Amino acid sequence: MGIELNALHWVYMLFIVAIIVVMLFRRDTSLICILGIFCLGLAATTSIYQSIMGIFNSLIYAIKELMGTILIISVITAMSKELISSGINETMVFPFTKLIRGPKLAYWVIGILMMIISWFFWPSPAVAILGAVLLPVALKVKLPAMGVAVSMNLFGHGIALSGDYVIQGAPKLTADGAGIPVADVVQASIPLVIVMGAVTTIAAFVFLFRDMRKNTLSSGRIVEKQTEANESDRFIIKKLTPKMKVIFAVLVPLLFITDIIIMFTAKLQGGDATALIGGTALFILILITSFTYRKRSLEKITSRFIEGLQFGFKVFGPVIPIAAFFYLGDAGFNSIFGELLPKGSHGLVNDLGVALASTVPLNSTVGAVTSTITGAITGLDGSGFSGISLVGSIAKLFSAAIGTGTATLTALGQVAAIWVGGGTLIPWAVIPVAAICGVDAFELARRNIKPVVIGLAVTTIVAIFMI
Image 1 (cartoon, rainbow, N blue to C red):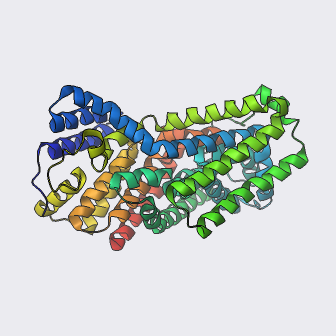
Image 2 (tube, rainbow, N blue to C red):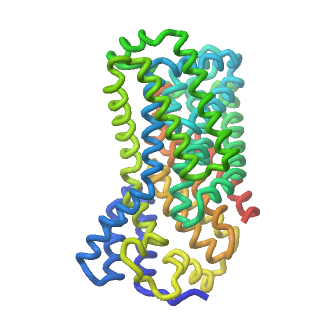
Image 3 (tube, helix red, strand yellow):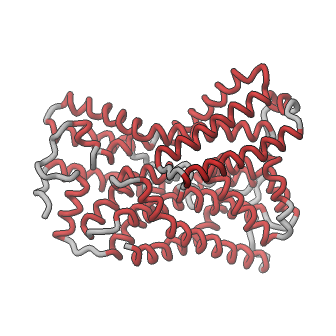
């Protein structure tokens, strides 16, 4: 039996509902989360000044918890920018262009390559690395620009980002929200990501080529676009010889493959695995910049690092206040406000889950469907990341009520949130792919709807049997 609920529990529940409602209206939730932190502090301490202090301290707590994730994404982005501006990306991708011999093969080759590169570089940088090189090749073999965009979108922002197995930014957020190890979420997500990825990409392939045969495919083409280095970088690129580009094009993937081998043999997970990838990316950035810019390398390394940090904090800026609120549902509460939870409490979320189980008949079907819907709702802001702490928190609440399935429900919510908001269904989230391929973002999002909805339905059914 759980403890008796008090004002803290009801305040927490009230703000969870408020956050979901605000997300449904596609509005930003940062203010609601900050107000939630203040009200929780007021209910716990009955002190206005301590509640105000709690807001700032909870943000610091969230930043500390997320700093590793923010930093790895910043470093990866900085390295990606250097690969693009130096022209190494073209050399890395060129061998794969020979595999693209027809439109059907182009769809799968571009998609699988996008997925692999997105695991290591994240999808947005991967789009820039691949797009300018592979788009002309795909067009030559009669795969429309819309087909290229769909393939890159579903494999990169869908499959790769929803699992996020190398950088582990997404599972870190959801695992923290659910109060379980990152490794548990990663393991539980593998079958779900495989099912979701297979169903969605195959469905999209069938719909795409059906429309191509019927000549009903709207290309959505708006403008021919090519990514280019800036003027200062064009001059520098000439200093990197073709031979050096080939050496780096081989060295970069080789180093990351070595990292994966080390991760398996040394059993590195979570923060340790992230540190290995991040350190390698930073080493690659320094090495390439030193050879490319020579005398200007010291300044350029700093410049790239700053660009990466700007991107990292831009992505996670909206996430920090939301994560700060949901950390209070578990261990974060005692760290921020002290030992003020009721005696016998195992955290606000756990207490609510136990209370819910005693009043509402819950089962794996209700839990799985709710996790999928919650994840999809949190993705409506077009971020995919801003609400996945909520996904983990809701999953913990329902698994506490059911008595099992925390990792599976968390992973399911994560998959739904990333597929909807991470860059496949929300028009402003698909802009990176749409811009590179020169297609209309709204048309791309519309084309993704049917395959993604079918995929989510099948994946939810699979999750029900896994719980």
